[in-house]
Structure formats: C-alpha cells, structure tokens
Image (cartoon, rainbow, N blue to C red; front, side, top):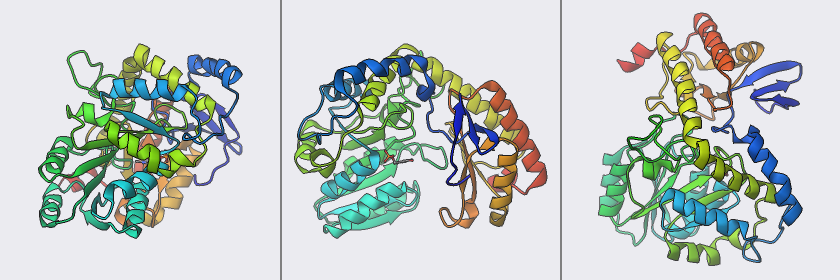
Amino acid sequence: MIDAVVEQVDGRMIRVGDQWLADFASCNYLGFDLDPEIIAAVPDYLATWGTHPSWSRLLGSPVLYEEIEDRLTTLLGAPDTLVLPTITLIHLSVIPLLAASGTVFVDRRAHKTIYEGAELATLRGATLQRFAHDDLDELEKLLKADRSSARLICIDGVNSMTGNAPDLQAFAKLARDHEAILYVDDAHGFGVIGERGPAETSPYGSRGNSIVRFAGETYDNVVLVAGLSKAYSSLAAFIACPTEMKRLLKTAAPPYLYSGPSPIASLATTIAGLDINEQRGDALRADLYAKTKRVLDAVDRLGIYTPNRDGFPIIEIPLGHAEQIGDVGEFLFKNGIYVTLAAYPLVPRSEVGFRIQLTAANTDGEVDHLIQVLGSLASRFDLQPSEQKAA
Ligand SMILES: Cc1ncc(COP(=O)(O)O)c(C=O)c1O
C-alpha cells in the first residue's frame, strides 16, 4: 500500500491492479472531491479564467483569491488571511521569518513539514528547541529559560497520526504569558472541527472553522495555518494572521513572490466548497462523526488499542510486533481495505501500524466491511491490547 498506482475510482472505492479496495486513506473528510455540485461548478470558472493564472501572486492574483481570503477570514473569525499554494510552502517560508534570530520551540510530534521550516530557521540564525509531545510543563521551563528576542511555538492542531487535538487554551496562555507566538498547523482539523454551541450537530462543533474556534480561543498571539487540500479537496492553503503580518509576508515570503499559484480549478472548488460548507457542512460532519464512532466503538469492542481519544476521524492502530507490518498490509489489501501504513523508520518501532481515515463519502457498507476485516485481523495478528495500554 505504498506507491500504489490507482487505476480507477468509484465513489470511495479504488482499483489498484485487479483489486478493488475501500479507501480509508483519503483526507477528503467532507467528500467534496466527489460532490456533484462542486464538480459542476468548475467548468464556468475555467471558461472565464482559463486553466491556470501562471503569475506568482505578487505579479497578479485573480480576484478569486480576494473572495476566498475574505470568506476564510469571516469563517475563521480571524484578523486576516493569506492564501498560498501549500502548507509545506507556508512552513518553509513563514517559520524562518517569524523565528528570525530568536528561538523556535517545536513539539516532538509536530508534522515533519514543521520541522523542515524550523530547521531552515536555524540556518538563518534561530535556535531550535524541542519539547515532549503536548508537554506544557517542559515547554514552560524552556520558555522561562529563554532570553531571545523572538519566540515561536510550533504545534499541530488535530494530530495527523493520533487524531487528537492539543490543549489549545493552555498553549495559547503560555504563549501570551511569555510574549511568544503560537503557530498551529491544523491541516486535519480545518473543515472537520469548529465552534461549539447548542446548535451543533455533533461533538465536532459547527462550521468546521478549525481548532482555534473549537477551543473557544482568540487569535491573540496565535497564528493558524491550514490547508484546503484535505477537507476542501483543493490545492491551496492559508495562514490566518494579523494584517501587518500578512503585509510582511506579501513582501518577504518566497511562495507569494515567486511560486506558481493554485490552479483555477482549485480556486473554483474552494469557493464551491465554502458554499456547500455553509449549506450542509454540519450535516456532513454529523455523518462523519457517526461513521467514525462506529469504527471506534468496534475497535473498543475488539479490545484493540488506538491512541484516538477525541473521536476525530483519524484512527491509528499500532501493531504488537512491528515486523508484522508487511503481512498486516497484505492481509488488509487482500481483504479489500486500503489504509495508510506507518512503517519503521517513518515512526518509532512502538508505533508501527496503520492509520484509518474516515470521510463522509465512505458508505455505511464500506464501514461495515472495515469493521468485519478488523475483527478477522485481530484474531490473526497481535495488535496492542487496549487494557494493557490503559494500565
Ligand atoms: C499536519 C500536516 N501538515 C502539513 C501537511 C502538508 O500539507 P501540504 O500538502 O498543503 O503541503 C500535511 C499533509 O499531509 C499534514 O498532515
């Protein structure tokens, strides 16, 4: 299940060679990649704008960017928003700028692309400090001991492996207390989790407006980065930040100055996705939550350990014996289940296993099939037992 060539798709079923598989490795959480209304919106945009603007954003941005940035700013309740092609490009350009010659504090489990940005920052004179995953005490000690002029704390929002969210309020408070900026990558939370309230259709909250709103936080000392390439099925990403920071990035961030822009089709599917999110996003999230809960309940019944404690649609299943990863992958593949394998050395030996992701476009039948295959897997292979982990 690595480097697979997908020859055909049918809904959330994919064909690799002769094998049809239910796809539980997709990050298209809301199913926007397959939404007929979103697909139907694209041709008009192509007829109006062509396929690709080709200018860097500094040279010229189709007015579609203004519309997307205004709508994202309103949805997020953020001070301002800047759209760039990918999160990776944002990390590589923005982390070094914000860290300057100060210190960048990175959660040990932060996404690899954050590390790439932090390592680039060290080449420009910043110091890199790592702290244990979610360990606020260790971070506080490091912040207290730090005398540098600029401090940047980098963490993931909804974690791409565990599926859990950090205690954002506590991180934001630490940042404010120590005059630091909290820089959060919520690639997997944006579109899935959002503001809480009595009208919410599931514990994911409403509107999918990301972790800052989900945590009931403000954007004081907090910069949010997220992508549209997961829940919004579009090649683009954004940083929500103060207007002065946006102005700085427009003069100093290489992806704004030099990179090729997102294709028009992606700007079109972003705008159509924002419309659909307003109309029926909360219903899609309620459905996504229900499907995820069914899988989590089954995992629990089977006595299988997963680090997922927040109920978000990323379910990691570590193996009892790391060396069985090849056999487990083959078993899942032969049984028509496609997941993301996490092999050593990409993850530590104790975390070798696989990651299941649910999307609103997975059918109930596919979820039934997944649960049945997980049962057979658990009787054939040693998975980590839930009680042992809890103890
Ligand atoms: C947490 C996180 N950050 C960043 C990225 C990279 O995003 P992009 O493709 O927009 O560069 C990913 C992709 O999987 C991710 O999971």
